[in-house]
Image (cartoon, one colour):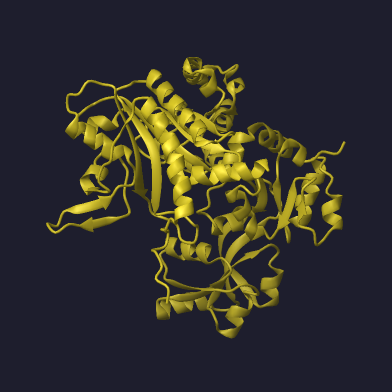
Length: 213
Length: 321
């Protein structure tokens, strides 16, 4: 039997990118036919399914505003956007990554900078997580925000170290970087708009319990 | 160069203003018919009015007057009205009924379109204990939203003491209670589960503590509540039984409803509309606040965010066409 989120009055924000395939597999297991989503790379809104697709970092934006009732995105995204008024309903377990501090192999340039300069330059796509991590560990850091290929920063002298997400560590190794500190383990999370969570409680609870079983 | 207003503030031009004014007039007629007299209190108050023990409401805007007194911009209207009752109505017969249409001042998070200056419409019913006082406040609230023109709004009703006392009765220590309530207030149910897993609770107690904040919905959620939930369920049933059908049909019960204002003591409310993703207003019982101002009286009130009600009205209209 094919189910649809739209039939229960729900709209789900699905992340494209690293969590896309696992998310669609999860929806398939719930009996939601995701073939139209898999077959259509450019379409973003699947109204008949109750699914919209977007960048993972946009998922909290849509859900907070109520443009989607539910969303799936990484804990890394939620930590970086921690001020959003959202409900985090379930840890979906997949998409496991670690948020780490990494720097070039050998003597840690980050520790060296802290000792001799009193401040360490950190390149990251996650400025708030990085700021919070260094603040909470009592170290001064200058956070340099980059939009992609963070690995380049320590190799070119832009930064002493990076804060980034790593799944297998391959990219870090290929760039001669080693993990110095683990900040957090990040997995995919189911989030909800707080108003939808109250007004569509039955449909949301039914979905959450099917995910859990 | 264009001179801007400070971030989080804005100008209101005639088209919007006339709609806001008409909306407030419709709401005001409901408040007045129910016997609520309109008051206005100063936007500036002494800091000690807001900072005193028990109120736990802080304002991000502090300034000095020419004598060196610390003043704050009021962060809500409930505390100023409590102060006003203590000083201007020291012996007046109760209940006292006041309404207001006034600005409150909040801090904002950057880049989020939040307002520093919120136009609030609300009432305070002072000297009316629950459940009758709570019933009156809920009735006026729903009538005001009806008059505003919203068709699909709902009012979530919870109890601010319910979950904290459940935690306490199951032997959760104060430090863990605070952590769990912090996760619940931010809506992080994964965090609640993580914190509960760290505690030496029986499986059934842990299951109960995980389940209770997710109990929300119509009267059906009050069915079959037993053990520690029986009393809470009975209280909500009593409340429901006292409501007129037109109000009762708007109410949803919410055992996980939390409020980040420190002065609430019992029933709390939050207003929702399916057309808009953020709550339109909130309220509840604050039976201990008036005592701080010298007139210990049970009280209840609510405040609607007029601009959000206006946004929801437009969103409902657009959904209809």
